[in-house]
Amino acid sequence: MLVLFETSVGYAIFKVLNEKKLQEVDSLWKEFETPEKANKIVKLKHFEKFQDTAEALAAFTALMEGKINKQLKKVLKKIVKEAHEPLAVADAKLGGVIKEKLNLSCIHSPVVNELMRGIRSQMDGLIPGVEPREMAAMCLGLAHSLSRYRLKFSADKVDTMIVQAISLLDDLDKELNNYIMRCREWYGWHFPELGKIISDNLTYCKCLQKVGDRKNYASAKLSELLPEEVEAEVKAAAEISMGTEVSEEDICNILHLCTQVIEISEYRTQLYEYLQNRMMAIAPNVTVMVGELVGARLIAHAGSLLNLAKHAASTVQILGAEKALFRALKSRRDTPKYGLIYHASLVGQTSPKHKGKISRMLAAKTVLAIRYDAFGEDSSSAMGVENRAKLEARLRTLEDRGIRKISGTGKALAKTEKYEHKSEVKTYDPSGDSTLPACSKKRKIEQVDKEDEIVEKKAKKAKVKIKVEEAPVATEEEEEEEGVLVVEEQETSVKKKKKKDKKKHIKEEPLSEEEPCTSTAIPSPEKKKKKKKKKDNED
Image (tube, rainbow, N blue to C red; front, side):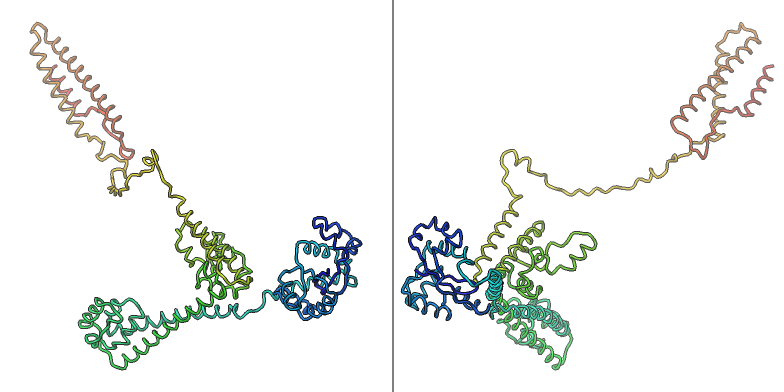
């Protein structure tokens, strides 16, 4: 039995010397522990060396695609056909092609896999004439070349068209807005009421293009463009319009501008459909995850799909918010949570408190989709659909986390009183501004004198009553002495009462610092004169 073994240096065909030992699959590795033991099992019959890395790359790409290279076909015709022995092959698909084209019997089984593994482990001893350093260099060169070939340039993967299309779409939107604003303002001088009735810009321009002058609205049929109610409102407004009259030349220029707006709008819809188709062809998984516009803007911002695939998930999350990021880093504030990815539908339908979390998860899954679209061979969007379903499920759990069913006594505790806004209007109290008393605490001298006169009159009346009640036994001198004593006692009692009243008055209402109180009972000079007169009269 012959064995076809492919290396990075060339094709090798070995002859199995002892086929009986191949029957023991589990212990076959023991026969390849050393190069001496391996040479007793297999022996090199022919070795076809590659001339350079390009030839090796062509041979291995053909093997991966299940095809036979010209060089391999020559070796098999020359060596295997002459030997008339079965050929052991590592790939069952390649064995089927060899059997179909060269009519050679090929073998592929677990025993062959173990045999290939043993030959690979002792390849340096089994293939003479090839140095290990040369073998390692050829392996590294072939690996790099094969990787470049797998990521080869494809016409379907041209992302430059997406970059140009999304840039043109943004420019068209800006120009359309400018043109429509100019058209509404221009025609508004002639028929200002029409702009308030018709809000859609394209319908507005089509109505202008069809009717033109305001006078033609009464006889015009706008049922194809407007509903019946709106049409009737437009005709009624045209009859009583406050707009100015314009010339036919002005109307022609306005209609020409309307034609431009309609044409640009139609081209924009066509360009958007083209962008959708290109995105589904180049990045189907990204389109499913974030949509055509957001995906195209991410690719345009990065420069290409390959450049975008090299970015980390955290970079993709804030892509488009670079100014805010560096401003936050400079001022040591919170960094932004999202950039262009904010306009994705998944982030838009999330509550504000979960937007940052969903944008982070969406960026992580979007990066996987970008790399799958950039480096993968499969052009299906199955992975994107699966990841989007996971994100939607995660979004539902986040939104429903705070909503839980309450039963039993928890319902009564969870009930909150209805909020009623009560506006309390408080007025300003000016009494607290000053600590001074409202009325003056000073007592005038005139008031004191009046009080003293009243007290003296009461004392005289009391003295007269006492004299009338006394017996006429007492002498005149005793009567005088007793009258003087009574008057003195009454005066002392009156003075004590005044002192007590003054003390109480001072305790209850403290006097101000600026104006001290002058309420002490000082006997007036008139009082003294009256007393002297009384004494003189008595004498």
